[in-house]
Length: 207
Image (cartoon, rainbow, N blue to C red):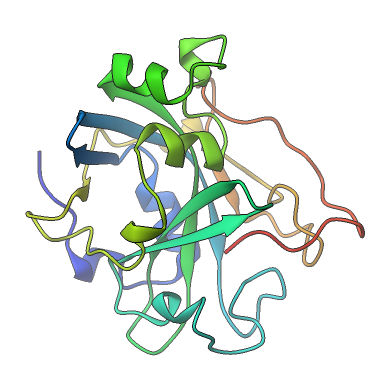
């Protein structure tokens, strides 16, 4: 496997989102390794994207999104779930891609232990919270470098996804800019999550 470089991620989030489909994310820890193939992602920009955590500027919470590219942005939602994003663009310019779903490539037993309530193995990493959970990623992983060979979480190029197999549509659960087709997924993958439109009563919970 070839590890993704920082330069390959230092682009517009829309471009990076498409690039990430088919890539592999591997997490190592004291209990073993889990590897997944990314099949669903969402792009988020900064000051021009009202659904982004960076829309109102830099804070202690979102500072990782301001670069450099290739780092992992981890945030906590609803007081119970972590979600993860791949930071892109250039240093000082915010942007990231939320990782929404993946297919388990390795470490399925460990993944099942981390998500025992999931009924189907194909749904172990369906949705951003499940994906983060099966990889064992928590707040302590915020800011780690995915391009570092010694990192506990690493990103690799995978089998390219044919353009005919890629679909795009609105992002899931966002309140603002809800109609932008900035979610991309691999058509036919059983791991892709169910679309859920956002609403006024839902707080902004994406990157």
